[in-house]
Length: 113
Length: 114
Image 1: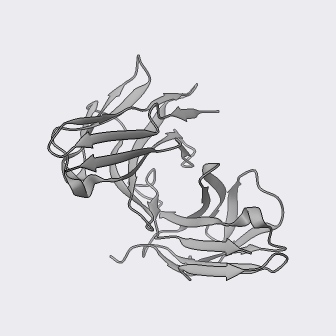
Image 2 (image 1 turned 90 degrees about the vertical axis):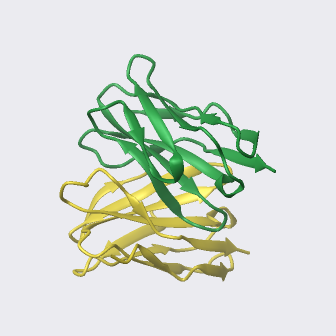
C-alpha cells in the first residue's frame, strides 16, 4: 500500500513571494504522481503530473514540481504567487497499473497582499 | 470537451433517508470513480466503475453503492443516512487510452445530513 504525506497543513505567504509545498510518499512499486488544486466550493483541478521521463514537470498557472525518487518526494513550487493562488493543494500517488490515487491531507496555501 | 458534471450540487437530507447522486463523465471516458471528502478524513476512495462493472471498491459500508449505465453516466446511492455521511462527494472520470492514469474531477455534490 502507498501513503502520501503533505508536511504542511497550512502555508502562509506574501504575494509575489516564492512558495514550496512539500509532498513525500511511500510505495513499494513505481508510482505516478499528481498535484491537484481545490478552490472553495469546487472540485479538484489537475495542476500537473509526473508519469515518467523528465523529473521536472511544469503545470498550469506557473506551477512546477520535481520528482525525487531517492527522497520519495514530489514538491510543488511557484516562483511568485498571486492572491488568486489561495486554495487547497493536494498531492496524490497512484501505483502503476492501479489508477486509483491515494491523496495527501492537503495543504492550504494562503496568499496575503 | 465538457468536463465532468455532477447533480445536484447541494443536498440536505435527514438521518435515515436515502440519497442518489449523479455523475456524467467527460465524453469518451469509460471509468467513473467516486470519492468522499470530509475535513476529518480527507479524500477517501469509494468505488470505481468501468464499462458498467465495479472494478475497485474502497473501505465503506454496504450502505454506499453505485452503478454505471451504458452511456458511462454513474449514480451513487447512500441508504439509511447518518450524520457522518455529511461530506462533499466527488466524481472523477478517466479515459482508457493514453491518459488513463489521470483522474478528472467534477465540482462535487455537497451533502448535509441533519
